[in-house]
Image 1 (cartoon, rainbow, N blue to C red):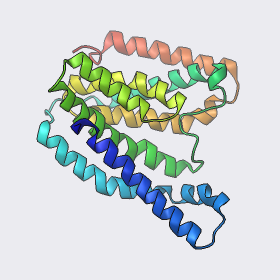
Image 2 (spheres, rainbow, N blue to C red; image 1 turned 90 degrees about the vertical axis):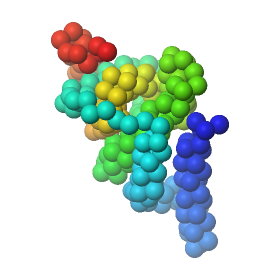
Image 3 (cartoon, rainbow, N blue to C red; image 1 turned 135 degrees about the vertical axis):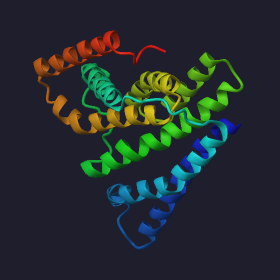
Length: 237
């Protein structure tokens, strides 16, 4: 099906890149047990390769099926919502026993690399792919609700990690809502970036086992979200 074309190409391309790196690394006589560490050191280069190749291609395909409207986007509001959602979820999830001591991004300890790959490049590629192309393609075949549900499930499942799946599933509905509200792919990209960057920057601070501070953050963010909903137009179509 056309809707799985880009995710399939995207993940196959990553697999080929990693396979080539592994082949080169092992054939050079290096220790196989240290390959993950070697791969982590090359993540920034992989991220830039993926961005250079896929972002232009996805934009081109996106423009074939949909054109962004020049609606006024409140970027500050979207950034604030992304930050609040990330903080609420991470504090909430941390205190479930089966999610204890896990994080959304725990596979790379280099802050700059993580910010670039998951905070900037990842949201652009994922929003163009899922909200921009897959969601719009599904809307042409199914009802809006069915298109939203399929896109969100698909978006959640590809994250391959239980905590990421739960977060992506909840966030997926909000990202589609924001996209539909502004009719512009930049809106969900900005919210997605803010959410990912917040997780990367502040999660290590949140999970220091300080119950009072963590739940104070949770409560403050929840109140802010309620205020935003009540006094702004962001949640009004």
